[in-house]
Image (cartoon, rainbow, N blue to C red; front, top):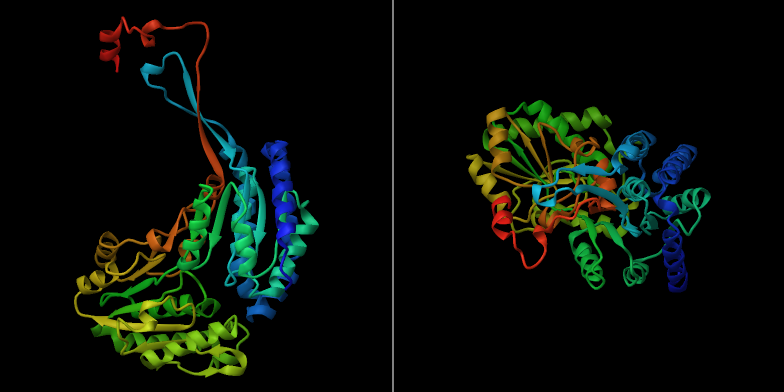
Length: 458
């Protein structure tokens, strides 16, 4: 895909800044109309989006709809339904020291936004932040991933047919284009990607003191306790790891299984895979491929870091790797120190849950954490660990609820979004004190004749 030139990028940024200054995007009717047009465009292009996801990632229509298209549509509808309430000024109590003033918080758009998306969920992770940008009243420049060129082309077509470029525009290209973009002055940047790239984005944003939302990743641990429902745990963990062939930022990244249930868990995991894909996972239309040769070779190399007790097969011609559980892994091996982003799941065992908790806490804070077990055990795990989000006796599903924040903590991210929090992510909370003119109390003025009285009040 051809890179958007630096001159084009500069022109787009200047035009969007000028359009934002007209105040048009601040009008509630304009934002609602834009969201409705956006929803219609997604629905119109649904089939084309699904076909592009199949071509670039071998993602079935069913998985494309469930994990990308439906979530975008649902988020847009949620914003249309609640935008008037979210945008309304919020009156707050004023302390007696402010009498007779009133206080309120006004939500105003930050301005021109930059949204940089990854390749693993190239529709959801590009369009979902855009919903927040539109809802808040910002303009937006979108940068999709070059690793999924068919999807990126569809995204550009959808945006260009729906919005003028001085309001919302798409730029294409490799990391050189990202560098061009990050050299520009934006009012906010929303980035989804790896922690290493997140540091580059944050460093570039710091030059202009630009606020950022960083949706990163990390190694999300998964606990399977002795008192867990092992059959259910195996099925839900297998599903979470198989989804998008493990190329999910919140996929279970490594397992901690109690030593007494290890063999049963492995057996049930195998059964779950067969139930999902029949006898041959490779021939199923529901199993995604690795996005690129570079990604495939990296993930395949992790097979050397342990013993495959489930799966282990691969096919270079198709960039296919079977869903695999690795046993006998070293905590210092690449598969245990690097975010896998593929269908390989290293497994370690424990005798005492405190051992596993201590190990997790010795590593960077993860984007997600999964705990399978009885109520007492899972509560202990949650109480003694931290993560961006978590599920008890499930995986992945916390991303579905737009009434909850989604995002990381520490190394796994900065800032939250989804639902109202997406609106908030692109808004400035402006504090306004409105003081009437019918009275002007002298107590606050020099030379503070009423200081003793004022001191009592304060």
